[in-house]
Length: 113
Image (tube, rainbow, N blue to C red):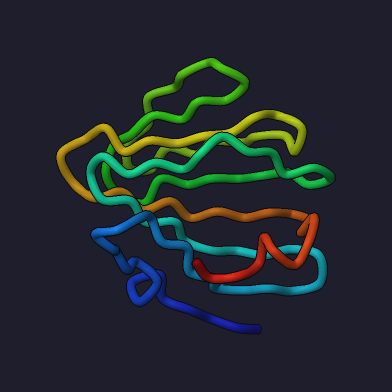
């Protein structure tokens, strides 16, 4: 058993969004994405995995296969690996997302950026 607090992973950068890996176990990984106002995650896919996203704080918009969905703290979103996923912080405060990839499609997905 391993236990972590999410607080240390909620790190923000003025330049771009941040990604902080919490766990990488087998073919799964869990991490936190952090966005200052105006920052966004570009459209991308996660082939061969399922994506689960929990909005820890803030408000923003997911764009999944072109459809926009407003979200706020405590919302949970599921996205299939073949769906095109993007996110933008269009609020006035920071946003943190807790993300689980159920199967890591490549080592590049499990690195801090």
